[in-house]
Length: 222
Image (cartoon, rainbow, N blue to C red):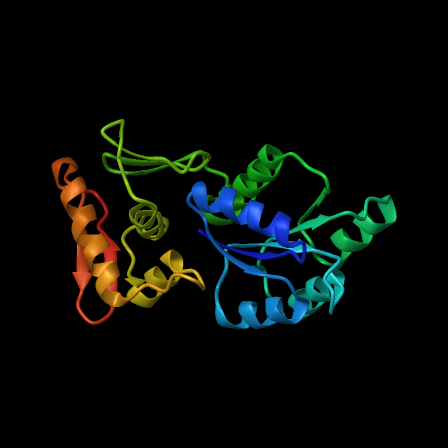
């Protein structure tokens, strides 16, 4: 899952980035509203974490612009503005949730999981594909009820395939899932990840099929 973090406090941004990357999320960090707008034009994110007090653009204007453009990206506002009026205004403009600084990182993570479970998995706690199972809360992946040992890239690619089981996932989409601005991924790197996943899944009869020139699909079980 790829997140955009728009936060101008360098120390907080680095701390959140470190924790979220450790949890397996791909995170792009920006510190200005205009940079957030540029990033959103270039990348399809799963969620945006947005500070309202950005130095060049009020975060509420970013929310307003996104919704007026018809974009449905979930937005979790992170801010020091704590009045009820501020919260109401942010929610009415199109933010999905609001967390006030200082906050417990565990609560932030829980809110992120809830957003993604709703947006990606239609609130299902578990997604099954034959003998393969994805826990949408922990984002752990199991084969025959045994947790698979996966690298962050392998987990991100397999989750993307499970999301569209039986359907083509373009290679460029997988590249975007496992890339961040400071760590670009090549087509060859994705092919290596797919090769490793096939080895880990073969004992469970789970097959990833290559659609040459386009991408991959996780085949539905018979």
